[in-house]
Amino acid sequence: MGSAILMSRRRFWPTGLLALVFCVRNEWVRTVVVASFALSIAACGTRPVSLGEGPREYLPTDYEHVLARWTRTEHLLALAEVDDLLTVTSTFESWDFRWAYVIRYARDYRLSVEQRKLLLDSTLAETRAHHQFFVALYGGNRRWIDLTRPESAWIVRLIDDKGNETAPEEIIKIAKPGPIERTYFRYASVWRQVFRIRFPTSTPSGPTIASDAKVVGLRFAGAQGSEELLWELR
Image (cartoon, rainbow, N blue to C red; front, top):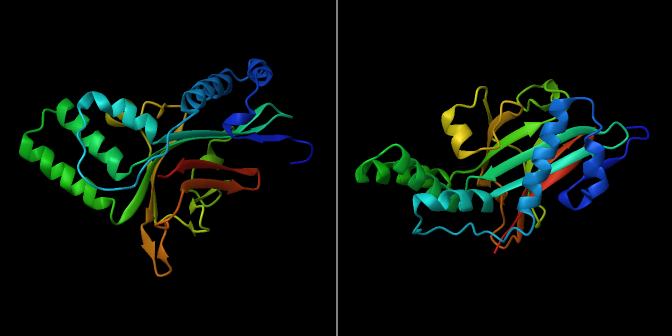
């Protein structure tokens, strides 16, 4: 990286840096960086989450709060070029999140009670086989942030604080986010590349998230640096 200075994580966004962003000549870079900064400010002070199963008593109006609870945003910046190398926003599609999602979706699409139950049962069953994340990326070079390309600048791993690190089982590119993605994951704009990333819940070595883990996260790493999106567990 030469003399480039890398900055990552929300705590490194001083007021002076935000002002400096407005000097960037590329208007779309500036727009996305500032929008992501606002999202990260909103995410500060996020509460611990639980991977526990069991029934929930969510209303359709609870969805936005649950979405915020399970969503994280991080930035990797090269200050020497005032370049946004990688901005990542991701929602952990956990048991808890999926319950709220189905309640909202069933209301919006006027599903019957039986249809809602079938959808809820099937989507919750998926959490026992996969840890799934909805991920939206932005970076200066669009080809480099396509996680499905062999020449992608980034690899992604599921991590926890017990030393587990797991490669994806599947990365699904959502080439053109439609009304569902744009409504239920509002950060999935046309300026970002969008994916669903699935990790196994277990491997021959054991669970990919330890039963006593206190933190779980996604790590994006490559030649340009690395950053982590973290969920504190309770």
